[in-house]
Length: 324
Image (tube, rainbow, N blue to C red; front, side):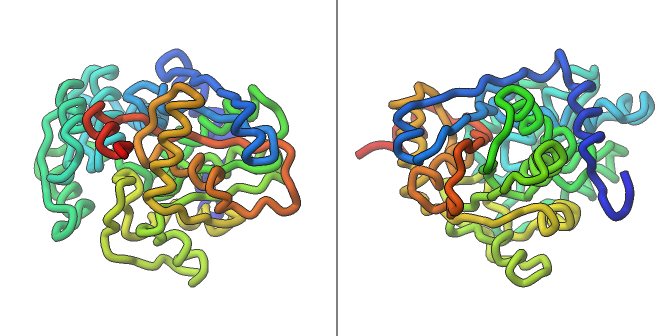
């Protein structure tokens, strides 16, 4: 990994080999109704069916499995709003070590309980007043743990890129790839894989309207911080892009689309009713942007890939969000 290009297609291929047989090779769904509504063939990569219910396991396992035996013996730490927390907890269990996870106090209960269910110790903080990076780094240093961040790590980014790698290897050429954006790790890895395999592909990110930090940063040419977003898409409630992820994304992304919370609900409903799959709000945002015609499709693409990034949501919360 060079300084100029911290993550390469080769790194993504290496990550794919490392996680093979541990992470799921998730299915790709099609829907004629979706094709008709969008005006193109749409290939939907179901990372909601990944282990822990989200793409995060790919990067967490790729990074954690590369730690030295001495580091693994001491344990792993992470900070996360939920999906990365579960991913690191499961990766730690798979690797025979322990995990300490820092989570926001308002994390959905289902995600906190799932993280503890994988054997991790959970410590909480107030996301609106506390600095999770500073708190997480301090906890890791105090206990001598190896910190696996949710996106600011080349091995994490490379691992996330295996989702797009699998999609393209399975379905072939794509004109456009649409990916949810939170801290930027999934789209950084996906763009690295996609443009490495298909140099002419357009890669479009999707953020919730309240959490447009990556869009603002790309427009400004530098990382821009915003107030912590208040959105149903809790997995995309980032207030500033990662430094490493932004260095990749400003070079590779072709645009960012914004989608309102109500349209995200529409995407969740469409996936459930028409595609028979359950998505959390963050997992539905890319699909929602397509359905809401929030993505510029000129020239008209023939084949579009979409990543559904996660499905970790309780039945109660799902019904609450989609209730009439």
